[in-house]
Length: 207
Image (cartoon, rainbow, N blue to C red; front, side):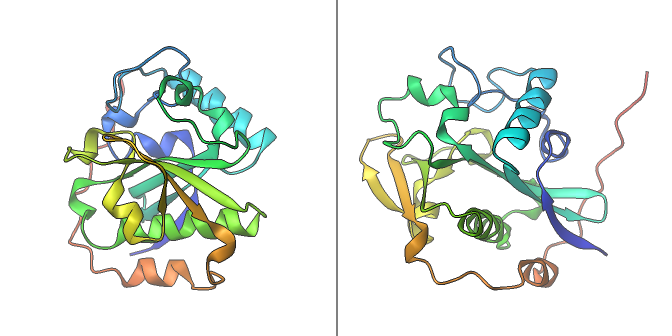
């Protein structure tokens, strides 16, 4: 068994959930239903990843076990997520990073992987000199497997505060300068997680 954290690629997303394949919710200009996969375009998704990598750098982390993706977290400066303009509250700093989504395979959930992926993202952004990070929190009960946001309670548990309240999806903020330096060996923590024996996903069929 080989577990590791790697920079997120568009191809990793479809290996967690089929609705993530080509999902362009945050990257869309037109108003979208607040559901993962409400609009999908795999070519456009790959182009978005290429553009962000070229202009800003790595924009997420994926957790692997051997060749299986356990989960991922995606983030980038707010300006790369035009769907923000359709929400009632916008981050006050368009250049500050926004954590857009966090998804974990069903058979790897509730074992600490979400916390680890969040820590990996914060460590990356802090090391790159970012001062603060934003995220939208889902305040009501929802199936988080189908919501392109993070849970508000999850964010509060990990140090985020409410920047602007909203009854459905408040804007949350975390000051990276207030964090103790993240020096933990995150891959060692990943390796120590007591995940259940994973169901091996079938290889995609080739026509």
